Length: 241
Image (cartoon, rainbow, N blue to C red; front, side):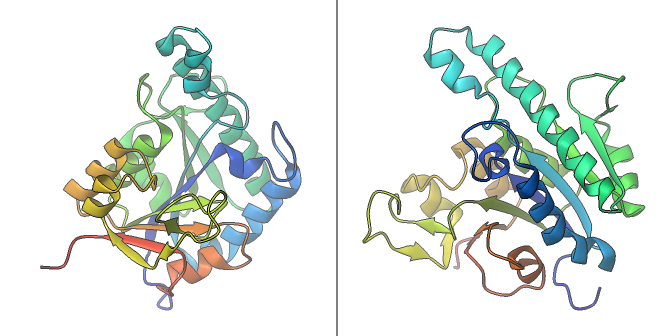
């Protein structure tokens, strides 16, 4: 445990991270990869919370842009995150990693309801705690849910696992000359609209001095290295005065 810089973290996974090589749904191979990435830290006693998006199944904004009521579409998106959370739990437990799913929307037949003190107790007992259904409210993304839960549980860092290896000054998929930041301030993220997380999530982390690390989850061992404080991806921190 002493080798790790962070002892309680929240890992934000995009729904797209579960796609793997597929165009829709959940790739079991990707679930196994995530379990392999997380297990060393889990076995070392790092307290790990997870928030996962639902974009691999349904995205509320996409539904709203097609004419659906935004609140209704967001509710569907929140249910998609519950499906992803249950898939993660199943994979973790098949790999002998104790875990709990806690939903912001009550659904007692399939998972627990989110209660902050109970979540902290799960973490203290060494259970991976997966927060599902976003904040439980429409108009809030799972990025904002991740920032909120990280602050609530007293996480030392919010780690966002994506398909790119950090934060760039422009979309690296469209611009080959895009430059990656090793470190960037919250205010730069907001003023330059760097698309690290949505502005609500970034502002919440800024107000609560919650450091963020953004990295590519497909790189083997990257989560463990981030926990040890090694330089991976991009770190979002307070401005130096």
